[in-house]
Length: 382
Image (cartoon, rainbow, N blue to C red):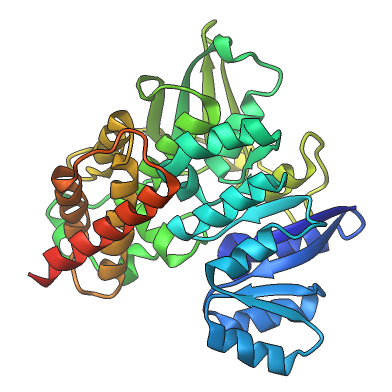
């Protein structure tokens, strides 16, 4: 029986992780869960998941829940997430927290010898230079949950690293893939949140519309698979059937295909190296699909990819700046404070204003993240 902790349990990945685990109750048990501010959804999860240890973002919510459920143990804040991630009997931690907030709990879980099923791409984007050496030092598994990175991971099984020519990360193009540059001037957050293929949380869905999500995935792939940026390609693939590919030096291109269903990469990260039946799943029918399409991304309409490659190649603290500025600008767009294109402008301005630190410590990364958010806040205010 493998014991699992889920960070970000009320989000899209967290809820689907619960679903997968409950359908494999003979193999997995949820020992601890961590949520943010969605207490109503957390209580729904608690009705189906009988675990002892629970963390929430706010102390007031912790205290209220502790009074309501006196038989449970509750924690609050980042320390609460760390407590869940480092529980003694946990074998694997599903990191499904959105954004930079997932970094410290992941670091501490690795130091406690926990395997990591990582959906929180920002952890590697901002601190890959810290995370990957820790993974090696503590001998833990770092298993990708993002559909694209899971696809690459699956396509690499049985291969040697020196056989890789390049990676190809596919991208649906998001809600605005067919919009002109002029039309993007007036698009709203409500429109951006209508992703054509996937059901995800609001922050990631906006990132898909800007293509910042794909830029973060490029940086994550760089760290996960030890491939330089010149050998990572992004291709627009509207159908989201091919989830990513590996091109080998002998010209073979291996891909992982399937219907858009995040439960597959979640389950594979939990059962690796084995495969199991995915309940209630739709099998891919190529004859029903008929044809697949692929396009080069338009960097004039969607400059996020160019900014991400620039941040990745610059390295050091620059990816942390891109990530923090984007998180802040993304939130402002969802709140209707700035326009869609302003997201790019604010991220670019933050990157231009930053003096790069070559090898930032964890403490420095938290300062840099705070600086980048404040920079965007001040810029928007004025």
